[in-house]
Image (tube, rainbow, N blue to C red):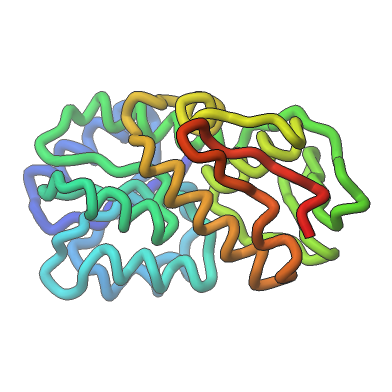
Length: 229
């Protein structure tokens, strides 16, 4: 049974979400304070966190940023703000999805199931490109660079696995959304850009020569070039 942490200070929203989740046989823990999240994560084995952005004590963005320093638990943001910049910021911080209030609790539960599927399902791909120093271990669902396992979010992992499966192929943003998101129409082109920017930064942190391995093809999309110096 999956365990979900709900971080939401609006009681009606929290109660509706708890009811919807528990009806679908999820276990739930609820807190109204972002400052309690780190301790709760240490004492519970959560499968996903539903995190309100506008909490009374600390921004949900700050909670996620701190969480990502030590954990890859999937995060779904809830927010009353619908601006594109907030959406992109949330994804850049490592969130797995972003839902705007008001929302349907049943639809939100469906999104949660989709996140859990893509963070646990096997992605079919062979370990590739030893000469480049980037390796995909499909059974462990990890990708390493120069022997160091990359700390990737679920979307980053699926994007990089897609590139590794077809080196030299140009993927459009639409194709990448379809491969890395269960509901590609809920995301935006800039969502792909933000995740690729993050992947490049993580590769660069390990090895400068791999930082430009994912190349931009202006007006077309992106391709992965294992021969990029």
